[in-house]
Image (cartoon, rainbow, N blue to C red; front, side, top):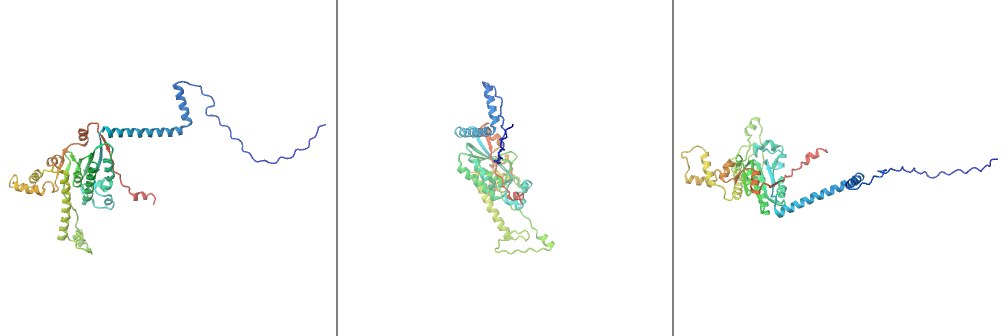
Amino acid sequence: RRQRHPPLPPRRPGPLRRPAPPQRSPAYPVPLPAINGTAGAVAAVLIALSSNWVVYERLSWLVTALGRWSVGAVRTLFVRTLHFPPTVTLVTMRGLIATDDEMRTGLSYAMLAPEAAPAEVRGESLVNLGRFEKALDRAFSMPGARAVALLIDSPGGSPAQSSLLHRKLLALRRRHPRVKLLAFVEDSAASGGYYIACAADEIVADANSIVGSIGVISRGFGFVKSLKKKGVERRVHAAGDSKSGLDPYLPMRSADLARQRRLLKELHANFIGAVQAGRKGRLKRDEAALLCYNSTEPRLFASPGRRTLARMAQRGDGLFDGSVYSGAVAQALGLVDGVGEMSTELQRRYGRAVRVVRVEPEAPVDYRRLLRWFL
């Protein structure tokens, strides 16, 4: 007979256990054969890189950054101690001399320089102290800089901005007496452009560059008759006799014209003083007066008398009357120091190994255009 056993008590349900995760196979289940020599070292490096590539990527980036910093430090030390290769920083001033706010508010560029209108209306190339202040500071304070090359291509513009840049360059020259400032004229350095160039130690222009225009001009329009034809009456109320002067919708008064001429003479006197201080006796007044005499209408006598020539030279005829000259004639009159091209001139002065470092100005950020993306 089969022996019967009592039934087993029912099992109490225990806590659920998660199944154990499957064992991952090693990256290399088969042991690699031992390789000695260079091939073994290369294989070990490749295996280490494949398994820990993130760490080695960070390490390689750190080593590269340290290498670049070390090379830059050694180069800077080499340049500072031996002054080789000679370094020249380049700052390019190209365009109309005006502030960015003037262009944004729609200031009539025809009143400043109509020949530079197409590019400057878009605000792509403007010259002012706000854009070039930091760039000039970096150019003069660059380690090992032997000179600062100022490439000018400007027809002029704002008298105030021209004066501010002129004063800034003079202050930097006093702060860095060992760094020479060389101005190179590309297409034109007229009016305010020549105002800025006079702050340099030397001015070099091309034979066909436009140089000069030492004068001040004020342009405007009058719409008095047009308003009368349309039956429009202009009404202006001002406290002060000079407050409403030169209103284009009112007839010009002789007192307003006298005040405007006085203002232009003041600005002109400041311009002449800056040019005389910058050129320091290099201007040839007699030659300029004779050229101005021969350039005007035919006279009774072929050559002027001594008194006439002396009177014209004292007035500054040919120099301070707004006359413009080519680079070759400007050199003969003392407006520029030489005729040449920037790269050739720098190599002649500092050798063929000269290193030209461009210093770009910081373009202003128009936050209104950025806000359009979010509004």
